[in-house]
Image (tube, rainbow, N blue to C red; front, side, top):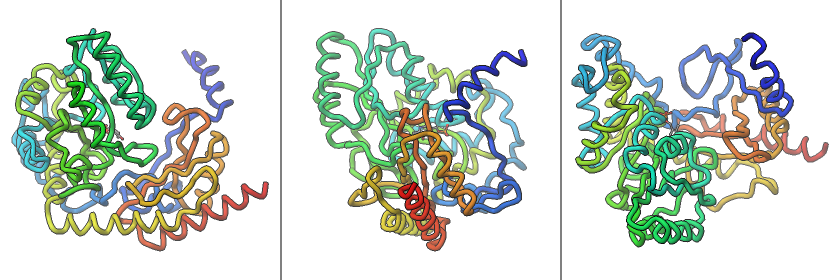
Length: 396
Ligand SMILES: *Cc1c(COP(=O)(O)O)cnc(C)c1O
């Protein structure tokens, strides 16, 4: 057993694709303590700085005092405690949908939900850059799977025509994200919805990186564009801008009742711990408050500063406006991305190098994330460090 994976690991190492864990010995925040050093953290999805917020901590502690630590059973058995129902009511109210269901993670939400929407003989059309959770959910459903090039409406339309012709009478499900996790760009929602209506398809939209950041009360991109009612299944996570942990689906009451009856990751897993659920509820309440509004405004100031200061080269041309908290800085070669990340680390910045299989081979990159907790000077100094590293590379 000891030797079983040695060769495979060695092969990963040889291609600069081996991954390792690193220990962070501090709370989440704009700085991270690693190996006795404090690094400025540009790797976190805690966009509003809520993961360490005292309101969330107090909500979790209060719920632990009242309800204990573990939920004890799955939701349908005896794990549905008051915090779960309170959270789901708040999620539905916040997203302005009939109902909501929470899961242990965003990953579990996708994995459990997609197979309840479609099955064998149905068709899934999935954007090439969709997150692994959507891909895995799609595979698990057993539906026929077609991938369309990223945000390519023409190809999607071709697939829809094909699906309607070759699989007449079957369900067609379009899976995409509102803000893409490794590229930070947005889906063309208006056009997607026009297509899905024309072909009578369903749309499931993963708003993992848009909630908390975009739209009224941070409700996401669909809400920002007044399109929520046209999204059949709204998915999101409680683990990123909301600072807690868990995932959710919002939609019609019948959808949610169907999920309660069929979503295996919901049914066959112990309910999320009440402390975490209560922290997520505090985060939802924060998003709707004036302080939440102010925090989002501050976040967008930081995003625009990063957009202005991030140096550009031929692989990284400047977009007109920043579209999210996520700034990819494309390097290409896997080892070069690792080298750049470690050069930045030695200058005091934690910026992850993202490689295959998270992104395509040869499109390795830094994935810089901006949060409301970053100081202007932290953003300035990161951009200067990238500029220096970029100039050194150009000279080599
Ligand atoms: C992070 C992420 C998920 C999974 O959410 P978790 O709560 O972390 O499990 C799903 N979809 C996208 C696009 C993500 O970035």
